[in-house]
Amino acid sequence: MIILIAIFIFIVVVYAFLNLYPDFGGRVTKEKLQVYSNLSYFKKNKFVNEVHTSMDMSVRSMISILIDYIKGNPRSKPNKEIPIESYKLSNHHPKITWFGHSTILLEIDGKRLLIDPMFGKAPSPFPWLGLGRFSKKLPIEIEDLPKIDAVIISHDHYDHLDYYSIKKLKAKTTKFFVPLGVGIHLERWDVDSKNISEHGWWEEVSFDALKLVCTPSRHFSGRSLTDRDATLWCSWTILGENKSIYFSGDTGYGPHFKEIGEKYGPFDITLLECGQYDSRWSEIHMMPEQTVEAHIDLKGKLLIPIHWSAFILSLHDWNDPVKRVTNAANRKNQFISTPKIGEPVLLGTDSYPKTIWWE
Image (cartoon, rainbow, N blue to C red; front, side, top):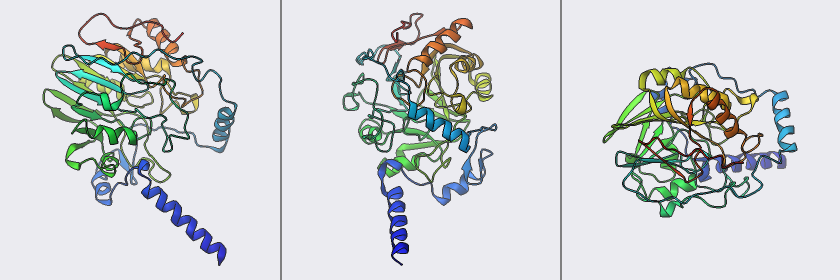
């Protein structure tokens, strides 16, 4: 009887923790699941990729990953401070500012769009336990940001949707564009539902002069042990009056790039992930050489590699992604810009950052 009571108490505590700890976010309602059931990419109460996507979770694979993480890699983090430029407010020229990892501030057609804002210390539900940022500072703190016209989210993983960042950003913006289901996390964090705009793949939405398109990616979702693939993941196509931008979110390489390129390309700028890869999970995170292939499929003019230089989420050297993607771009005669964190990339000019600052 004592053992049974102990087990019952343990189950109740775990259940309560999973449902009450705010970082985990909310839970998608049965009503929403019913609506999603009509979608071709929603099966058995879960979102699915357009093409078969293997995420090897075999015992052998998991053991090999665990061993590699225990061994570690002394070059997975910079051995000195990486250069950071302070963000400078400007109302005159459209630009893109990379804040490290996948956080982007896009200023276009009089709008400021903040994409996948991760200003936290570590991408974890328990940031005090996670491995911290490579850099001790950011180009600007959230409190000092100017007014943000909209926040755009690609999916609900911790390195893209950060609880502490969203809590602070509520005072900076009144509009959130997210893929299906992700709004439940924002509502859990006291974002007004009327300020949340949820979208499925290929849905277009007008935002004054801009057109935003929730386009496919090849990934997965989830913030806890019980919500795997309960919300959608996506990339975003942003079409301005004169410029077009593509943001990949997290994704493996796949046919969706050519589909998007054919429908909405050519793109002036592609913001494509190039880091946190491994051959064992290459179908959900591109290898750097595939990043360049995706850029070509999208009919991109200028490639800016993202999803690197902030956190240890994989086993490669910290600067290996940018080395490989730059070499691949040069071999394919593609234009690539490698700004420092905080260094602006001005839109509508032929001059863009391309220093080798990571050496």
